[in-house]
Length: 204
Image (cartoon, rainbow, N blue to C red):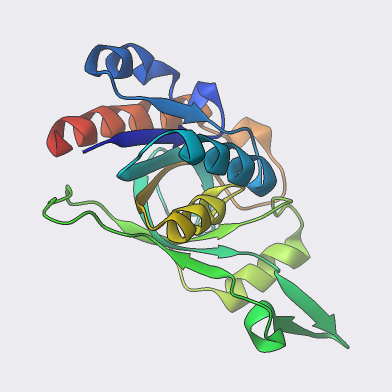
């Protein structure tokens, strides 16, 4: 099985680079955001055959009781805000009849994954950081909910190319008014990479 590890930044998988090289597992750094991710991944897949995409990264959790550093499997991801405003209401892209905003993982056949908590993802162009917008998330979504800037784009490309795709994210911060002092990026990256290496050993 040909596996491609996908991340937005090299920092997110830096602790695993020597392991990936040793095991001859390729990786792709897409850049931050949906546009960069879609372009980088689509371009790569035109040149290389891939059976399974493993998209990994850090993200923000809506539930402040979630331990920072915990790793989640994102089973469904939404392109947040894809639609139109209508006099105070929101019309989704599905309601407009122009496409869809929800994309799901595609599990490989005959692979038993490790037991891990699952969560819904939202993929945004601008991370939430005001009390008003965060309150709307609490009113609109069930927990656990994890925010990123790339997840749904990877699921989208995988669906278009009919490739298996899994997404895993480690919680680096809460979705709250911006507070860098409360972030645990180093812990999140450590736990993410510990999980990634264990997962690759498990799969192989």
